[in-house]
Length: 534
Image 1 (cartoon, helix red, strand yellow):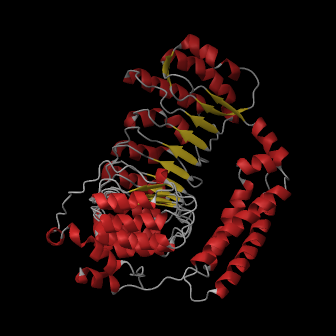
Image 2 (cartoon, helix red, strand yellow):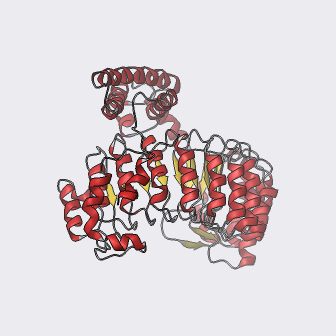
Image 3 (cartoon, one colour):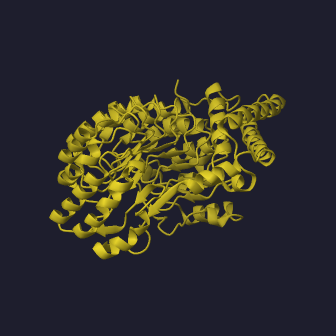
């Protein structure tokens, strides 16, 4: 245990949470501006502000909150600043509500805008085949003059006859459409009929100026992509494109890139659950590289390996406005993880990152954690589950987590952090993190010491909802400890039915030490500081 302690102590440095950096202060102003202009339970009661008014008020609120928190910090100059951070957050929230109560300025305008925005949606109800007669009845509201700008034909399977009924209606309204959802609209049809339906819809909608297009869940493959050629070739203003679960192979990915003439305005691109592979990823990376406005990119479960992962990572490095990144369940490996860490360093606006099951291992995880620590000040979700991460990388992860004071959800499940890693993570979470609501360290070979400190670190967070430490090696006494810590809020503790108190580590040294040394481990490591990388 002494050697374990020395391993972690040599990188220990105390953390000062106050004062926040200028970028963090500006980020808070941006978040408050968004809250003051976005519909919510409070805005329905009090109204909304215009963007200019909200930005002015947000700056004023931040100044007052910062001054109040700074006064508190001056009274405790030797503290780590955690109490100042909490005052900063609470004072900002209180003042925002006061502003909304005082300024119900554009409520009526917003309600009028929503009332005038017409959406035609037939996706409700049971999934069903649609033939000509039913199509005539369903689409009747679109005949004649209307103000429809958004259509959703999802969850209904169109046959050829139904498609021919829809064709003249779509031709009559295509110039006013801005959003089209054709996800899951040919399910169960023979390939020839499905391709004919896609061609009919594509020709009818050709030339429409869309900002949103969803073609997901149609098992298109390359033939299906090319069936939509007329529609795709006419799109130069797309802001959101969804091609999930579409059988997008290497050839289909190339077809998508070939057919869409411009992605300069693209903000959202989702390719989830396809068979893209490395070669397909190379094609997608070209689209990504041509999408400088991209904010939300999802390429999860697409069979992408190291070569494709490196290409995607390098392309993402050009997307400096990225806010949400989801690359889960691919075969990136360490090399792609290292490439991704370089790209992540430019994502100043990143709020959600999902990097689970990428085979990152310690080297990839440490590199990514170090990059994230110095970027993405407003990060809210960090998911690195299932990456074979051990205690070796825990110090870098802990330093990253400690720096992310807006973190709401942390998922490090299905790794090998053990007690050494769990203790460092718990220390990173202990100070500040007032917005934290979910932590998952299940299946990490954690024993009594790590479980107890994790529980103590999160139990008093004001908005905390769930700690998942199931599928670990916690002794019966450790289970009792954790339940006692959560005795006043038992619903915040996840199930422990898959915990194995007799569990054995594969690490020979850990087997020799045994469970009897848990208390000794905690006593030696409980005062360690989070390690900061210089």
